[in-house]
Image (cartoon, helix red, strand yellow):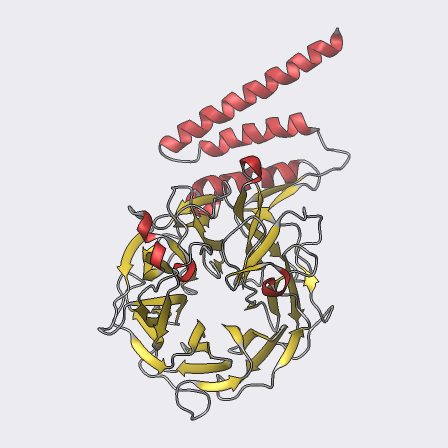
Length: 522
């Protein structure tokens, strides 16, 4: 996989964080990414901006800041989706700034919930449509039915969960049944996330006190089920971490964190919900799953750890996001923070763990970032408070048949920018194709070996381990010779370069083995 820079700011004033990414379900090459874009990080002033890719995430272009209505000073909390005919939508929280007061604190006047629409694959965006007005609106999310184009939005208004839907590609909005936009679905609610299954079922997970809860609709948002509890007595980050100026933070760090649940719909009636939990003393990702569309939930009523292998207690996992590929493979991405830098400096990596068995288990995670990033660099002051910094309360993740695409904040350029990870077979499709051929041929000639490619584009050799196994050196020689032959089939400069590298490797391996044999004779 390859880290790819999505945004390219020239000023540290334009720090990016709290990102969302969405892939067109009918064209995996088309993607839209959005995030907060600060205008003054010291006084917590920002708006939202988007970027787009039309080549599977290899190249990204800036769409610019989203348009504001005349009485707005900014917008916040991006959530993005695509409908069934290739329109993209972004749900936003418009507000007016209140100037910083003595002491450094700043607040904002929330206006309500607004929807933006792009009809050209994220290149440009129309003016926003304000669908609800309340000073209590917050923590919104959006999803669409990829088969009929219905769009669904959910958010908090104080402790009430509100809901809106469009059945005409965003032209008009209504609530559940015949109610007006902003139907109250349940209370208490904190930070709901909405997902739509292939069969049209709507799933919403959210925090209710210290429980992770869930409601669903099986009639396109006409009605919703009574709430059920997915996980009891969660030890949230707020409950398990020290608080400074009202915000929880990890020891040795100053950026604020929260427990915000995330969910996805897998194949059939599989539903998975995940969250960050402090029950082990260090932050870990826990999850629970259902195989009947959220009617009943399996395994421990308190949830189970996503990663079961040993993890250093100095490392904390937080901000999970979980999604499913079209084939039902489920991936969870999260931040890992710990003493990774010189002198034990607290740095952040992005990790991904993938399940190929409907979330029955998640094999050990792998780090996606090329290098950990420093959350103290170019970090905005949360609400203008220099003692509490901001990297976002979530970051983006989406998936296609090509793989998983996390979208995270990163400071390797000394500016808070957005990066994603492009599966290797998207960036170099010709190389991936012939490497698969090589390893399939190797498997056929070596008694049962073979190859598989995981959801992130990694090639895994399955050795034969049988009586005909020729040993690692001969296997490597066969690989390089097959690579040389495969390279002959590729046109252009890449062919010659690959043939040269294959021959060099073959010669080096042969010389190494010859030295070994000569040494044995002595």
